[in-house]
Length: 156
Image 1: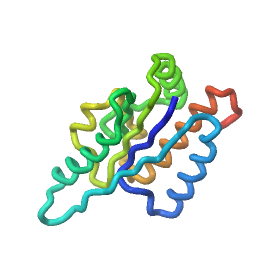
Image 2: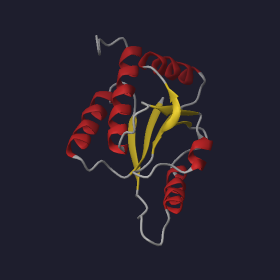
Image 3: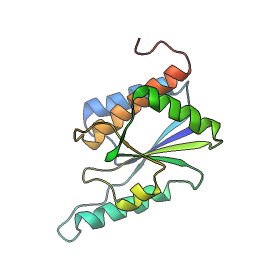
Image 4: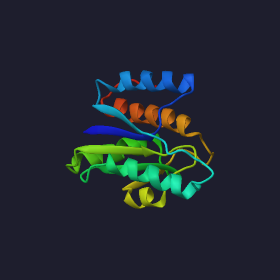
């Protein structure tokens, strides 16, 4: 299964950028994973947060293929354990869908249209996380799920 990470912007914080590269390297032997950032919409006095989210949603949705299974990371979603994520990924792979897309919004969140398109809305925590930290935690959990499925001794 091919995995796309559709994100608003690229990580700017050093630790997040380093962590991103670290997990992308670890994931490479387990699954083809691509980071597919979209340009953030500028938040100006003339553009409301809703308008910014709408522009970013259009950019994200333009990168999403019709056959993609879509997992949106948002605080309004369901919390899923590491083991549950591994099971979901196994089920998704068995379903015959060949692309899994994870969507992470920018600093001001996601437009409702993105949430409506989701096959799963996943909350990493009840805590509010920065979008950069969210990407890093999601990558770590993705690696944990794929390593578990491959029988690797990660996290033991």
